[in-house]
Image (cartoon, rainbow, N blue to C red; front, side, top):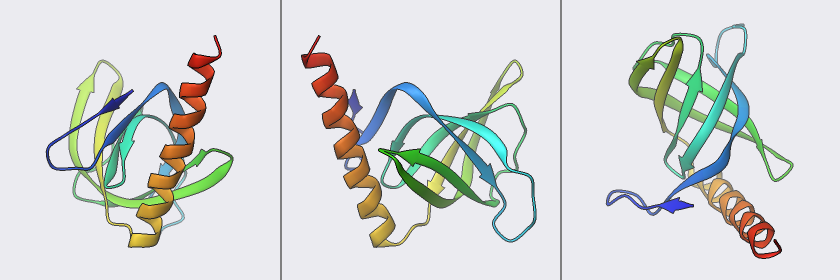
Length: 119
């Protein structure tokens, strides 16, 4: 479930990607549907059918453990396979937001482990 990288505390890979949406923060832009396959306190990977610009600021919205989350960040890499784009978003959140993400991932991980254990 968890994958470790040398430069971050942890990166959590979801069993099934969680849905959300992404949009530009200061503009009245249309939200774009996304799926999030993994995340860390410092960023996340996301899939979308829409091409986004790298080095641009975006807001990502999703729900984790019935709690609405918002990550502000920049697209740092893009990979296209067929009609699907995969992006790496580096978060620029404050310490409170990062703490909320870590706590949310801990709760999610416990629930996922308990679900597997109860089988």
